[in-house]
Each structure stands twice: as structure tokens, then as C-alpha cells.
Image (cartoon, rainbow, N blue to C red):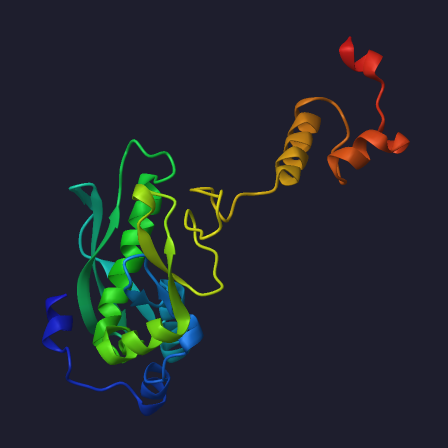
Length: 225
């Protein structure tokens, strides 16, 4: 690590790599947080690094084991590309042990992705997100404020024409998720589980089709024995 840091900044990346890293931002890739800060999801950073350095030509190297501090998971690592040190950073993500949906492993992955994005500030990738003039222009053209179904209905930011979990402007929806699955899907999933747990044939159709199609009927009396 010390040798990598000592050599940092001594040799620029080849021109073809620089061209990929310096590509202008695509407005469609940008998203916005409820508090109004814009960002590009970490997956696009990974894609850009793959194109610039090749798959396997870069890595986010951990410098310490993830740790928990004030309900946050912290991930400390550094970005290495073409054998060169690029930058190091501490990424963070919320973690509440009592929240079943926010497991520790998911929080670690989120903190790791946040660390990668922060390390990429040293490269000319999506720097427009930190430019005040670009941010104001993007928000004016692509974002809107809506009433939140949480915290007393305070207004939050969202991308236009994009569903947002627990945020909606339609009356009567309150905090119901935009991504809630239709009941039909849950019924079909349960039908598959019922078939596996019993000795019935595995289902390849919907629950209603299964019950109505004679080909899939089973001998109930034999099953009850």
C-alpha cells in the first residue's frame, strides 16, 4: 500500500482510457435523493470502470473490516486500476439491527458501493453531480417535489415519471409502496409452494388454471391417506 501511494500521480492513464473516463454525463443516468441531492447509481460507475480498464483491470481493495458506528456500517477501501493507486475513501450505509429489511450484509454492500463512488471522485467520472450549476439545471428539468406518505406528509424530491418507494402524490395511497406486487403473483407463488410441500405435480400454470385443468387434478382421497 505504501509503495502504491508513493507512486500515485506519477503516470497518467493512456489516452484511450482517459477518453472513456472523460465521457460527458448522460442526463438519463442521473437520479435524485428525497433531500434534493442528485447522483448516479453505483452500477454505472462500475460499467464505466469496466469499459475504461477492462474487466479485472480495476478493484476496490478493503483496508479494514467493515465496522458499525452510530447505526451506520462503514467500509474503508481504496480504488486500484491498472496497478495504480487511485484514491481511498470511507463509504457508509444506514444499519438498524431491529429492521429485518435492512440486514447487515446488505448494509455492508451499500457501504462498499458508496466507498467506490467516493473513490471515483478522483477520476473525471460523473463530476457534473458535484457541479452546482449542472445540478440546478437537471433538477429544474427532470425532478419534482411530491408529498411523502411518511413523516407527516412532508414534501420530498423524486425523478419525474419514476415510481418511488413510499412516495406518491395520488390521494388515498398514503405510504403504500409503488413496488407492491399484485396479489395474483403471491397466490401463484403460494400454489407452487403448496405443490412442493405436498405430493402434487409441480405447477407450470397459474393457480386458477391448475385447479380447473383436469390434466392436473390429483386423487384427493389418496393424498389424504
